[in-house]
Amino acid sequence: MNTTKKTIAALVSVFVVVLLGIAHAAAGGEVGKSAPEISGQSWLNSKPLNLAELKGKVALVEFWTFGCYNCRNVEPYVKVWHEKYADKGLTVIAVHSPEFSHERSVENVQNYIREHAIKYPVVIDNEFKTWNRYKNHYWPAMYLIDKRGIIRYLRVGEGGYRQTEQQILALLEEPMANEK
Image 1 (cartoon, rainbow, N blue to C red):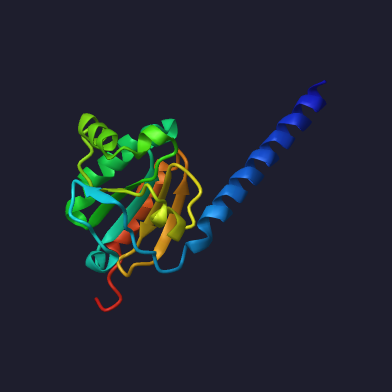
Image 2: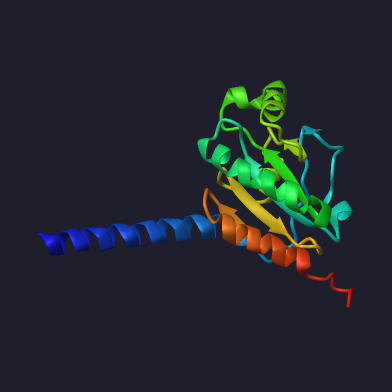
């Protein structure tokens, strides 16, 4: 009986690792390549931003939707990173890509970001243009883009907060290619 439990536990562990690996590989195909442009129906908390304006800064691009339970769990960490590192060169851009019809309402998104005190730029991506450019498949997903505009890190789902923050810090410390 004890051997059966161990075997089942081992199989479940392997299954989880395989699933996580598949999810990461499917979403992570663009790591190491130039980041696609970010666009949308409208921008909240900011004028429209483009990647050329962000050269020399690190960007955290978060795909989320306000009705997503997992996105809500990631939100406090993204807020803290914005507060701690915006003045050190981090730009957070939240790409709101709706899962359900009520999430398509810009007014509903505005209410949510006001009620939750989200201060960083939010772009409305109801047509999934940015989502598709990034070949994204998940809520939440966070892409870290370096100062040269290259996607350097991807985090899908909850967790990995310490690792993500370490990646943010490492990218902020990196010099631009022409700096010495």
